[in-house]
Image (cartoon, rainbow, N blue to C red):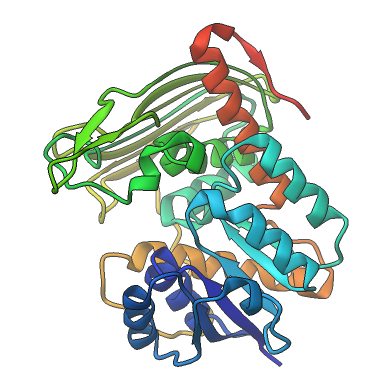
Length: 360
């Protein structure tokens, strides 16, 4: 019998989570919950789901739902997560888990005291190039890791770009791009190279004011630019940079140097893989990215979010054993908490803390 799913939050929830659940055998998307009538109606039409609600507190307690998928602004994750667990639901939560490590610790305690399956959506572990790198490193193809670097650029907060949702510009609401983009990279780096032990960072809000269309000013305190130096549990040194104030910027790079190989991935733009290269004892060659399909064989929606939907669907497939009490490689709530502790530590470091040790 399929697990009956209700999604709370119909922005990214309707764009990615809903289509992903509909692709994967073992789940049945049955209901949506949203705060605003307009987006909720649009999500209902897009996904073909007529069972809708605007009351999340009642929604997470429904007897006819097995799984709650939380896709809300970050500051709302914790109360919905805790209420859904208390109601006996399995819970999937978008990243980042919470605005702070302290909030996330409460969620970890609740999850680990429960017999329910819980997970965090670091779905980009399952993107074609990330999945290929993950499997190569896990198989020992890199050898002992020495050094790695990851970088992402975008133009989301360039002065010429339209405003995003206002909560994204506020630290106390979980905004900023350490949370918005770098959290995926931190999770991926820890998946490859073990836990982050210490961090030293420079975290910046380059543009502290943004004009609204109505002529008023939005005060910004969340980060748009960051550079993190990470000491990993494996002994590797990692450099991680993120910047979203570039003019028409859109790039992602990954480089790993190990005892047995060098792996390099470069993407320019949001849609196509530009290059993945592995250099090893047999020379240097272009390497294939993962072509793992969704097992159901259902086609991906023909839209720009198809890449994210595909990655999310593979995460959901790999989560299915958890509902029978079996282990999976899907990110845990503890994984989400550790990422948040690293982000908190990076901010403390940038304020003058120097090297900051990460709690375990």
